[in-house]
Length: 160
Image 1 (cartoon, rainbow, N blue to C red):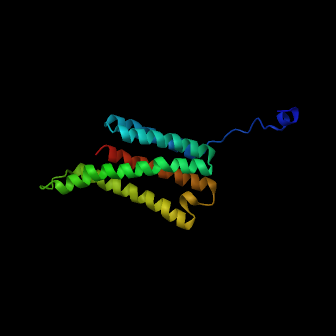
Image 2: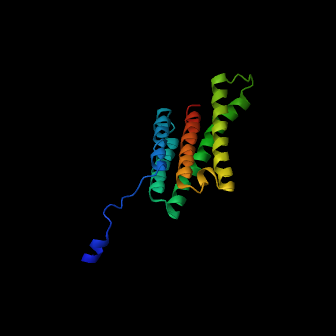
Image 3: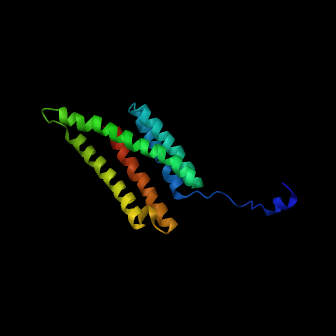
């Protein structure tokens, strides 16, 4: 590096953290919740999701986006698997149909949070709205909302 290169460096050019970096940290609560309920693989997936989400929302490149999607889909699939095995199959095999009210409310909240995330993401993608809004600040706020809603839904799955 010669003297002219040093003079052209912008020392104040720091990486700005978007609100999505901070909202990604909510997934740490899922890690601890999964550990508390002895869902170690779920905890590992959420730890991976937390790390890749922070990296992606810090650097926001095509490749970090792809890397971030791997644990996103893994958490979605595993969460669906756990929900199916803990609630759906239990309800079907329970001949007395005595699934308690608390479990049914959790199941309704799980489905509600899942459908709201699907709506915000899919409808937003199709209409350039919500997480895909042309305004960067608006899209970041909605994407942070997706982090929060999905975290809450997975807390309910973990606690089934």
